Amino acid sequence: MLRIAAEATLGDLELDVAAEVAAGECLALAGPSGAGKSSVLRVISGLLRPRRGSVACGERVWLDTERGIDLPPDERRCGYVFQDYALFPHLSAWQNVAYALTRLPRRERRPRAVELLERFGLGDRAEARPRTLSGGERQRVAVARALAVEPAALLLDEPLSALDARTRAAAGRELAAVLHAAGVPALLVTHDFQEAALLGDRVGVMDGGRIVQLGTAGELAAEPASPFVADFTGAVVLTGVAAPAADGLTRVTLDGGGEVTSPEPAAGPVAVTVYPWEIALAPRGTIDPGSARNHLDVEIVSVTAVGSRVRVGLAAPQPLAAELTGPAVTAMHIAPGQRAVATWKATATRLLPLTPQGSDEVRH
Image (cartoon, rainbow, N blue to C red):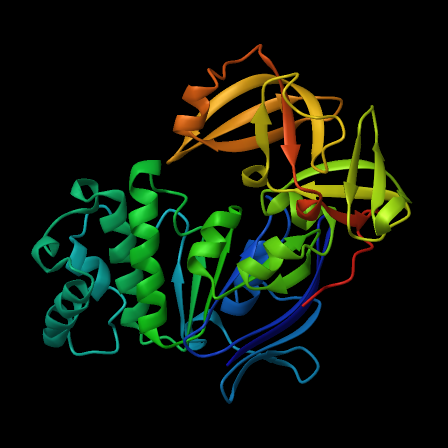
C-alpha cells in the first residue's frame, strides 16, 4: 500500500492531498494543467519536499516531516516514467533499460534488460535506438526501465501524451495490462479523463491542489460531485434557476432562455448536466411542444468525427454538444448553419447546486 499526505505552497497553488493506492491498483489523478497533479508525483519520489506531510510504501516510511524523515529519491524505490520518457538517444533499447540495473554485476545487466524487453514484446528491438522506435515502443522501453529497479511503487507522468492519436488507444490498453501485471501500487497523472478511465482502477479528479472527487470512472460520470467534475468528465453543463414543478418534477429556467425539467429535487441556482451521447437532434417542427422530453432550439455550428461517433457542436443561449452515429448524421443531412431541436430525457438531466469556487468537499 502506497500512502501519501502532503501540504505545500507552490506559487499561487496550495497543495493539500491525501490518497492511498493498494498493491496492484492504479490510481489516476486527472485534472487541468496547474491543478497540482505532477507535484504529487514529485512529493512521492522525493523531488519535492512538502511543508507538511508523509509518504509510506508498505512498512517503509519515505517521508514524515514531523519525525524528520526524508529519504533521498535514490532510496525510495520508485519507478518513474516521465512524460517524454527521458530515454537516452545514444543508447540502444536494452542499454536504456540496463542503465537502471546498477545493482547487478555488469555481465548480468544485458540478459536482464533483454528479458524485460521481451516481456513487453520488444525482444527483437533490443538493439534499436530510441529515434527508430515508434511512440508506443518508446513508452514500453521507459516502463521496462522503470520496472527494472523492482520498484515498490510505479509513478507515471502523462504516460500517453507523447503519442499520436493513432497509437494512443492501443498503447493505452497495453499499458493498462502492464500496470496490473506489475503487482505494485501505481499512480499516474493525466489531463485527460478518458485516459484516466482507461488506465485507472480509480480516478481522483484534482482542482486547485485538491482531490475534489475520488471513485471509479463510472461513479464519477454517473454522480459528479460538482459542476467542475461533471464538465471534466465530458458532460454538457448549463446553468439556471430551479423551482418545484408539477408531478414531482423540478423545472429549471436556463440562463439566457429555455427551460428543462428533471426528476431530481432542487431549488435556486443550479448546474444542469447531461452527457452528449444522451442528446438527440430532430428537425424543427417535428417535436411536440408537450413532449415529456427536454427540448431546446439550437443552431449546428460544427460536425466532428470522433472515432465511431460524430460530435455536433450546438449554439443556443448556452453552448452544448450532441454525440450521434454516423448514419444518423447522414440521414438528417446535419451540417453547420442548420437549425434543429436538441432533445433528451428528463431522467438524463442531473442537477447540481452551484457553489463558490473551491468550496466543494471531497466526495468518495
